[in-house]
Image (tube, rainbow, N blue to C red; front, side, top):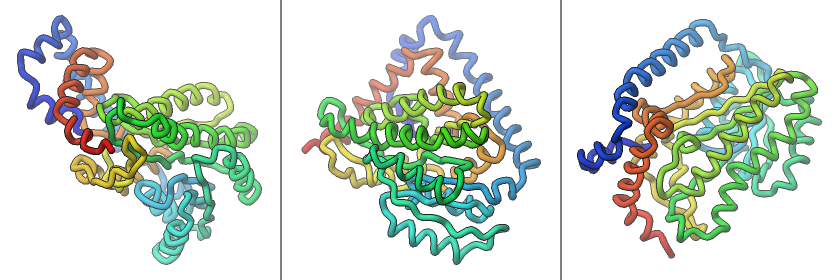
Length: 334
């Protein structure tokens, strides 16, 4: 997510100074805070890699939504080779079947479990409880639920049909909430389980021309943060993963304000992290029980901190970003 880089180039120094105002003393401490956070995170990762076991997830029943492509597909590879009992869920069962065959041909895991394919449409909220019940009946339980499926959006808020806002909230938020609620009682009864929500940096910091998407991710962050506290006594873990840009087809498949397909690959998306790298980090999260994982450059982490400590500066930056990028999205109006 190019939150700070290009925007600082176009911002006039006088404007930045005016936005900072009396908050200059706050800004000057951001460097040490971010550096300390990065150092702590690096040390945490080093320790985790030194002591975590590659067999820690072997035999676990793990359900991945949106497993037919992108990050979900990468997660399937990362988990299957570790001996996981995979349940692959998506609307596209043909792609899931291809993935299943690839996994079986490619890996010799420590325990061989044939992946299960489940057709799941998160837009059909009424069907989700029965799908969850079917999985529990066939597998006995679910150890880990990875809420990964989702769609993105590019458009101008005022020109976006309300049906698009609803679609994004249903797929990215309500669908996963419904699935989580369907699975959670079984985890609470067993007093074990792990719920993972794949959110986004945009769940912490809004950027222009992503209103539907960032709203759904803010909702995701809030729900699962609340849930974490509520189920702690039941020994159920809840983790929120917040990646920056990932080099997938997310922008190609994004919807516009009319509901049509955006169909373009953003430069920031194509230059993003590889899905394999993000998947490996999520696996480490599962093994080590991290409650939150922010996978983003230091500049993005700084922007998130500034949103809390110096909001007027971030607001000014985002206004300039919106003005600069407006023509990229207005032409999509149909």
